[in-house]
Length: 483
Image: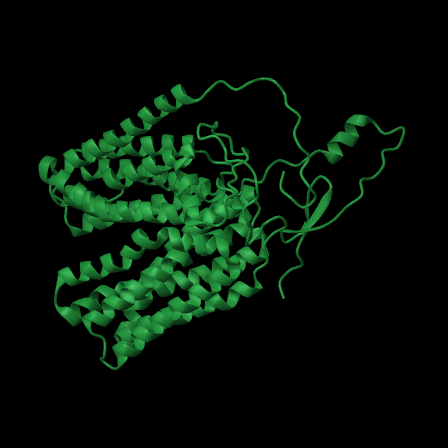
């Protein structure tokens, strides 16, 4: 038993652990009571900007712990997976092929997976997908333990894992958003990023222990247990008031494709639950297209620091593996600090994402000109912070901008686009490094990111029409619906 939960008092109600209770009647003001004193008592409190505010919800605390367990198990498996492929095939090319086979369903079936998330209850979808991923992990562990895993079977299991992930990814992301209020979604995403980083560190450490004492199959079995743990937690999660796990498309006209970038615009499509609706909404939503362009350019010309900074440190800066390890540590610290700062956001915008991406690009260009390792470390830290905050802001926009009945399909579109980046980015960057070297690639890539963001800002300023100052009466929302 923990300490008693304290009520979180608002202007007119008491909340226990994120659950709305009955309104508390306001005390009547005595005739002699000064009006200013009455205002001081009933004034709305300042918005909570704590990066940990999402953890005030009990279900979110359980979800974060379950995700930590799942991430630790996943990184245990990923740590030994490449070694397993090398043991079976003896080929580095086969290792890369297995990763491509697992990523391929995201490119081909992302839209279908997102549509499934919109069509079926979210909690059920997430629980079933987690259980299926656990079954795949247990199957792999069994085959490894009895030395029955061939290259063909391994590729088939990788493809099945990638196929399930097209449903599991958006389902789990949106389920986490249902557990908090909209203004606390950035905090939930920031906490999720920290949980991911912590799970990665713990999973990589446990992988060595598991393989050393129990064998490779133990890592897969542990990952299977972690998936089943998440599936067992999901039925006990309780969405906050107003959050829905399944919303059918409301009837109404489609929004104008050149609508201003306002989060409260009524973006609804009433043609049903088809896959095409998600693609059409994404293509006609300027802010999502702009977010995709910014993220795509940043992924192709930046972010791949395991390649660019490794070559820069070991080449022009004449450092060794230890020096690159120091740079990697600073990048990790900056990423964690950025996740904490990003969790303080309440209503991030695409403009903020662009500004941070441009800042990160300019810092990357400066890093490419670093005369020494010390200067590089000074530049790498704010670069990692800016990119981490940009990631949190962009993810928040992506997951909250579409109407509830289209969010799964929008995330499916995003998954397909992201797969293209992950497949095209490293070869394109490698070619740029062959032509311009590590310094040239960092400088050219950073300037390209900043230039694209600036061009998008100029283009947006020319296409947005003036906003009318005439006040129109607003419809009163029905009871139980969001305003």
